[in-house]
Image 1 (cartoon, rainbow, N blue to C red):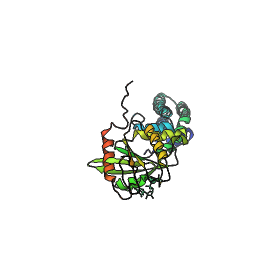
Image 2 (image 1 turned 30 degrees about the vertical axis):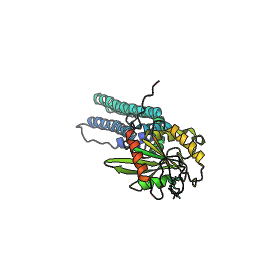
Image 3 (image 1 turned 90 degrees about the vertical axis):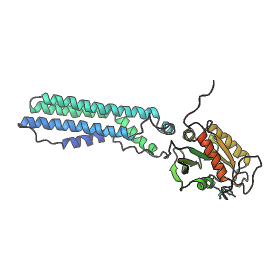
Image 4 (image 1 turned 60 degrees about the vertical axis):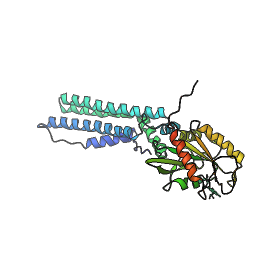
Length: 329
Ligand SMILES: Nc1nc2c(ncn2[C@@H]2O[C@H](COP(=O)(O)OP(=O)(O)OP(=O)(O)O)[C@@H](O)[C@H]2O)c(=O)[nH]1
Ligand SMILES: [Mg+2]
């Protein structure tokens, strides 16, 4: 989803900028002093420009925190912290502006200077002060580099597409259901803070593309067996879910009794309090509970279309997942 750039630490960044700056050349100038001056100007300008453009590319390469969808915002908060990412990016932006300002001011002073010694002294001062500015953001650069890996691991969800999340105990038939309704082979993505992966399928109704998220290992056991980070990362799914399809296996061939399946349903409802949940009995070819819930067989296909139609209705009739209606006090 996100491809943040590699971020150099202060020392490596300065090495890069100064190495390039030393290569700056000019043949302009009629006298020796003029040439010395123009060369000093070219070097200071080059150093300032390289630092500023590199820092700018870092800022642009990270997600823009004010515009990212709530799902990703929450994942960022769990993994690296929105406030800390914001602080590090702000520090980098400060150094970017400062580098440009400094380079400009010192170029003006070189222009006004007389004599090679004075010119060289200002040039050295410029490099020293640029080093000091970049040195001050070393820890921010290091933190940004560390933030790359979690950001790169975020699953690539389309936050605009109406989204159906499929939940239920292992072996109840989630993947069979998702495979049956998806038009293409589902894509698999790592899920932050869990050893699990989500699998993303899609299908179209008219011109609308729907997203289906299969959640093996995520929404298939009690949340109290998880650490807080995992719990938060899982609850971030509430931001993308427009409807939840919860599969129950009344045949219990999945290996879990109906009673424990029912209590997982309660957990999932707590996780998605504002999302309509469709409870479906799967494996109707084997058995149904007779409780009047919708039934289907992901194996034979019987009842799948009706379930899908109802899920689509729920996913499109509710408010967008990210909007939580204000509750009356
Ligand atoms: N008889 C019958 N078997 C089914 C049905 N749906 C799925 N199965 C079988 O149940 C087993 C588990 O199905 P999956 O679709 O892998 O279940 P799952 O919920 O994705 O399981 P995990 O990925 O482990 O969480 C497979 O052997 C399926 O063939 C059904 O409607 N009827
Ligand atoms: Mg599965």
